[in-house]
Length: 277
Image (cartoon, rainbow, N blue to C red; front, side, top):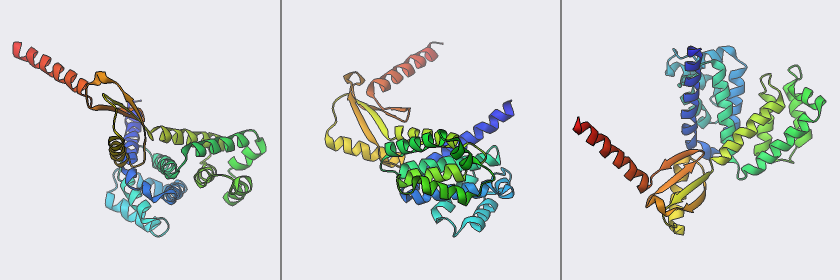
């Protein structure tokens, strides 16, 4: 029980940190995402490599030399650098490193898209095709079918009819299925893309309307701290007095004067309590 929970939480922490680290690489676009997928598949198919890269007792230098030996020249230098930083984090199990790399690849793919909604609807469309045809589902999920045959099948099915980001995600869902049903992997990818799409919207509450110039500045500072562009939904609520409340991807940054006053009041009350005793 508790050990499993503790280990799972170390993976969760590593993934949360890596999601912040990745914003520096997102400008490298879709090729960076597909490099993460390539590395995830390579680590998944080699138990020794997986064990060494996720071993908490191995030194970072050993891991980083290993990453260079295996991947330098095969993927971009940005991807190599990112994997070095990722493998230095603490993962509960070797497979967690693979799962994290794949999730971060989906995140980077979504970030490279100019139209997240289109990617979502195309993923959903392909998922419907797969789930409504048992033979197709079997062919794409079969462990014995060669990867090349599956990729040829995808080429026949989607060709250039979908966005390049959608296609990269479909290819990864099939090529990196790791014994999972392709429909289930597509569904998971779609959820991750949708979550990324929600993080692109910032709900901002202000005491008085913002000028176009102020909105632009705010959008710029949010974009640089999040590593991607954001859409602003601005609403006015005079009761916050001044400052603003920003909510992005379910996280609230409260910089309103009203909340600062409340905090100050609480501090004064607790200080008065201490002095009385």
